[in-house]
Amino acid sequence: MARFKNGLKKTKDSLGKRLFLAFSARALDDKFYSELEEALLSADVGIGATQNLIEQLKDEIYSQKIKVPADAKALLKDLLIQSIDFEFSEYDFPLVILLSGVNGVGKTTAIGKLANKFKNEGKSVVIAAADTFRAAASEQLEVWGERAGVRVVHHGEGSDPAAVVFDAISSAKAKGTEVVLIDTAGRLHNKKNLMEELKKICRVVERELPNSDFRKYLVLDATTGQNAISQAEIFSEAIELDGIVLTKLDGTAKGGVVVAIAEDAFLPVLYVGIGEKIDDLIDFDATEFISEMLD
Image 1 (spheres, rainbow, N blue to C red):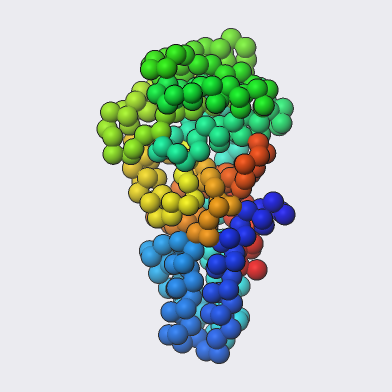
Image 2 (cartoon, rainbow, N blue to C red; image 1 turned 180 degrees about the horizontal axis):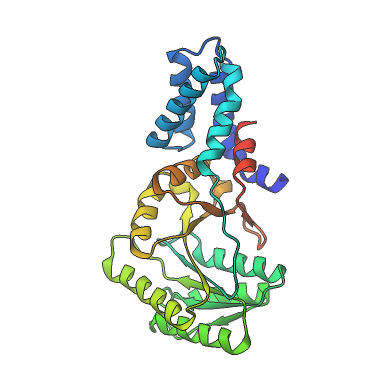
């Protein structure tokens, strides 16, 4: 809880003051709703999600006959939690997790931290270094693999990423490995040939491990704000995403983008990065997140 609190400090410092002023108003009038809207937008909740939340809040205020803003804060908290609280289906094993995303969002780091997380939970893990384009990408993964104590399968620079995945899965089947983590090259979401490459990797997984629990996650940088939404929508069209890994949450005052992602892309945030250490990728908890932002 303390680590999550520290990771959300910038968002809370920005949003908390604005919400305090809004809910300190004397009346549930246009000024109150305007200040509330401004507060939510400042945290990057997004226009659509903000408008929906305010309309829902008005309905609840009316139905519950609430008279003063201070009594409406708990309603807003409940509505925010409901908007981002997706039901998570527990992992089955063997498990395959593919991470995709644009350049610079922290995919390789997230893979290393996920490997450490699963290893600490007693699972055997292998990493497929399928980013064969970025110089030193596999070397970076090797460092993470050593730190986490897991195997890394890689080929030479410029080789076929799908072939790397094939070899990693073959290794996993031979050794009875429970978790396969696939790192992929950063790609602009408007580059069709690179999106086709992701689809090819997915086909290899589905063919070679047809009974695995295959999850496809998009890594988003929390500091990019609303640009994350378009990334999520386009990547999801290509490979039907199952969720989001949100990095660099500790470095932004725009943590409300979690709400925008849930509302506009209808995808759950599953893990959040709150620091540079190997254990600073943590499970996302909707209630804890909203409580920390609002309380």
